[in-house]
Image (tube, rainbow, N blue to C red; front, top):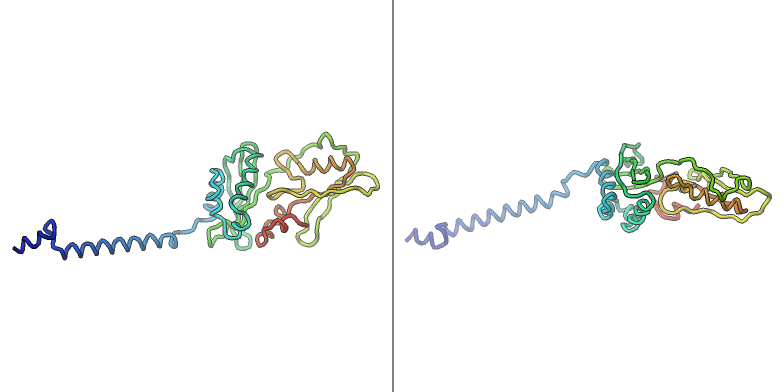
Length: 254
């Protein structure tokens, strides 16, 4: 009878043994769940090299969501994902597909680790700077600029005998911006224009590969009696100064 009572619970295992085994399994599951939940907190943060490579890799693959998630809170506020997509695809439209990068270590700045890189596209190259918060493993700053400033001839519509180019400083103090005033010959007064950059850190000529868009515009207008002021963008000259105020006004307004 004792043997029959034991088998009545199922497969010859007493009911008490089944309950104990079930509790043991449940405890193992709970312990495993706790270990999995702790993984994100205990997982090592990426190094600054890994952060920079992950950013470039995401951009090369068109994965803007992954690139955006590498940004810290200030960067995400300053450069929403859709803006990042627009800015990057502007570079692709000009230079072709992003193919590869070569990274090196820059000098630390204000507690951030800096990574510099040459970004190679189908039809040209850009220079990049990535500032990484080493404590959080996040991107705190990302800047790109043309890789070179090749000499280029004057446009056919510019008459260099009808203007002169004067080196000037726009603004004052430690953040003054180098610029060029292209002034028609003669006593004046002249109508005038100020050329304001588009997106990204740009020099006064808005150099893109072998093209110097703003210089050509300035010389063409000056040949026709219009004075033109152009200047290096603040994000090109003083990128670190924009970290705490990455707004259009701080970047562009004089």
